[in-house]
Length: 87
Image (cartoon, rainbow, N blue to C red; front, side):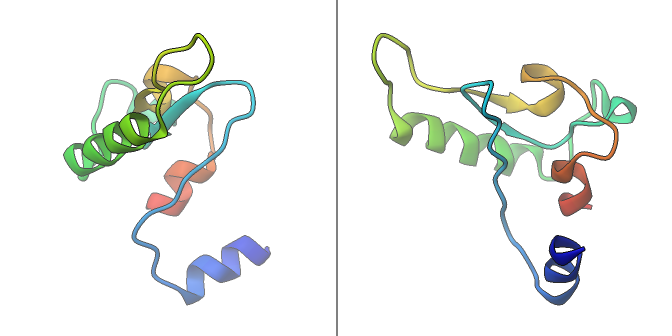
């Protein structure tokens, strides 16, 4: 409920989601109804994610973070925070 109120009372230009099991920079869309579809801001999101990956750098023996949509990199989920906050 608190998060809902924060989003209702403010205008957010950008948000991030941390997924503890994956080492990726992911953005909208993440719901099954959006499989193989791009968000209206896909190009901007892609460029931001690419920048995060580049400047976040590599760690240990790993390459830079992979980046892309939640559907492509992680898995789809109904009612995920990414899509809800974006919409």
